Structure formats: structure tokens, C-alpha cells
Image (tube, rainbow, N blue to C red; front, side):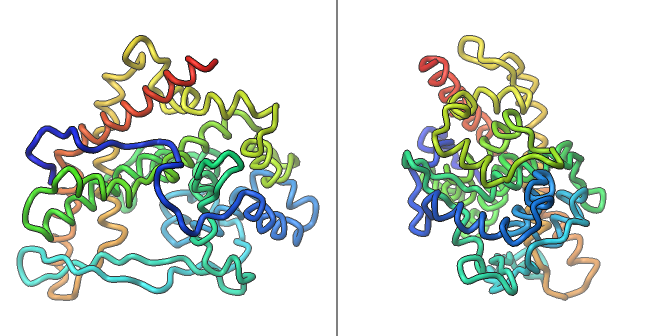
Length: 346
């Protein structure tokens, strides 16, 4: 549900310094943990860049759905530790008829991992040397999808054309649509602008969005698919540690992202392909919202046929959210601003 007033009081920020992250790890500390994992492996394995991107991604995102639907091309790669979704938090959601939909929020846990990795979600938000905050788990997810491209269409429902979009920015914006639907139904009214901004900050915070952008920038600047390349930790240090060789890649990250997702170059006050792109991705993030509902919603067993129908109905409501276009437009507006800033600083 979108506020009925003209939506002027909310935004989709893309930089990772605005949102608080009390558990953020310093870059050097994060890289020590990653290097310790690389050093446990034979040289041939730790220098297999493509393989190690998958293994490190599975530290943070390694549930069943990732192997089966999101990045099936990497399903056979053995994770460093068994991955499980533990400590569920259930949020009841009333749906028409004798059904209750539980939104189930789960936290990843790695069995047998060292203490600093048992709960990997506490490590993936990283504070860079210059103060930027980046969710490196999102970076690794995007890089792995780039290496294993394909569509996303669980059970043939609500297909997304590119899994790299689904596991990065598109999936995050879709989760905002779904959560706004959920929160509006709980409140039995439209969300205010402040409440909408709260959902954006929770589901697509700037550190996540910057990690999404950096996946495309790193993927374009480094040989991430090489089987005998360099350690992933070295790539991350080069890109985030202020290396002169990575200066252009990082200083033009938003420009590269716009090109990689198909928006094209910034021409005046719009990207070259912006109108057609907005039409296409309005549908894509609607599908991402439906997939989010399907992934985290569990229906109580009040009668399977009706339960399935109710869940599919909610997925359709998320897909058709009236917030799709304004949310996407705000995202693109933030991207235009960042690309313009990069051009001015060049």
C-alpha cells in the first residue's frame, strides 16, 4: 500500500554511510577471516577465483533456494561449512478465510565454523577505510550470479530474466514491495511516507545497495571467472583498499552499474535507455516481490487447496503493487545523481 499523498518524503539511497550498522566489521578484520578460510585450502583451490567466489558466497547465502532456484549453476560446489537457517522469527499475517500466513525470518548459521563465522550475518557488513559501509555478502552473491547466469522462475512462477538482478538490487526492491504490502495489511491503512522509508531502510539499506552496485563494478573490472587467477580476498583488498589500479573501477562504480543493467549512458537528465528500461523492470521487481512472498511465507494447514490459493493471491498482490513504478523511479533518480557526481569528479 502506497501513501495517497504525493510521495516526496522518501528515497532509495545507494551509498553505504547513512544507515547505522552497529555490528559492522572493519575491512582488515573481515579480510583476516576470509584469508583464514582461503588458507585452509590447497593453493590450487584458493586461487580458483570462480570456485572461491561460490564458496565464500555460501558462507552468507547458502540455503536450499539458492542452489535450486537462484544460482543453480553453483549447486554442486561444496560449501566450506554446512549452512542452515536457524532461529526463525514468525510474523502472523491474516488472510481471507480460515488461514494464517506466517512470514518466517530466519538467520543463517554455519555448523562447525570458527566463532566469528558461526553467525555470518554479523560479519558481512563491512566498514571500509574511508568510512563507506558495504554489505560484502551482497557483493559475493552478485559476483557468483554473474559467473553462473540464468533466469529465476521457481516452479514456473513469476520469472525474472537474470539471476544477478534477482540476488542483488532487484530482489532488494522486490522485498520492499512485499513488506509494504504486509505492513499495510497489518495496519489496515496505507503507509505514511515515514513508514515507507522505514521499510526501504530495513529491506534495501544503503550498505546493501552499494554492495549490489559493487558486484557489477567488480565483475566488469576483474577476471572473476578465472580458474587459476587470484585470491578473492586480494580482489576485495585491491578494490576497497584504495589501490591505484582499482581507482577507476571504484570511482566509476555507478556509471558501470548503469551500463551493466542496460540503462546506458547518462544523457542530460536521463539515461539513454531509461523509458524502455523502466517498463521492463517494473515487471521484474513486481515478480521479485511475488517471489519474496513465496519464499518466506508459510501457510497454516487449514485446508491445502485454499491455503495454496491464498498464498498465490498474496504473491499476485505483491507482483501488482502500485508502488512498483515510483520505487523504481526513485532508485533510478538516485543512480542518476551518483553517475552525475562521478562525471563531475572525473
